[in-house]
Amino acid sequence: MNTNQVKQRGGNRKAQMKKIIIIVLALIVIAGAAILVISKDDTKESNGSQTSTQAAEQPKEQKVTITTVEQAETKLKESGVVLGEKSDAYYQVIGARDGAKYGSGEPTALEVYVFNTDSQANDAKTQVQTEDNTIVVGGNVLVLIHSKNQTVAQNVQAALN
Image 1 (spheres, rainbow, N blue to C red):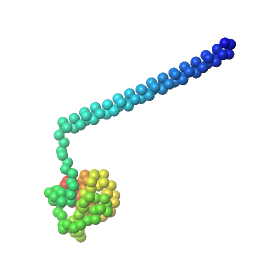
Image 2: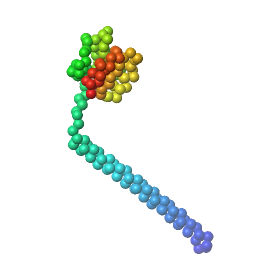
Image 3: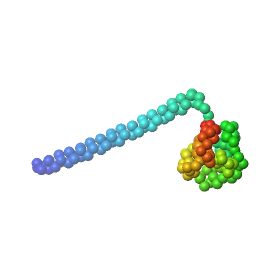
Image 4: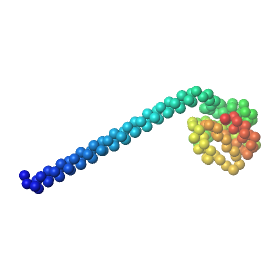
């Protein structure tokens, strides 16, 4: 073997060793990343269980979700809101699951809309808001009061909380 052949073999071995080292380093990095992801998931699960345990230990006031206009009507009446004659409302237009109008034509006429979620009720607020009415949202219920009477608005808010 001449000197050039020896140099080529040595060069090939260096190139092969470089490839092996790069592959080993890549595997170490991948294994390290996998360990971090697994440990993060474990941390989330353990934190989640601690949080739910702590929540179970602390007594909270149970908020009952209103699912029908009749339930909302009962709560409003219990809070001193005077409701006029009930009539149909086009609740589907604003994405509500149920709705009714009370006392149309009266100074404190109002509309009650029940939504599937709290966020849907909040989103609908912008659809029905005008300058001459008051909107009260409590959970998944939106009440449109056809006046700026703050006493009525406060009674409605108390009923929905």
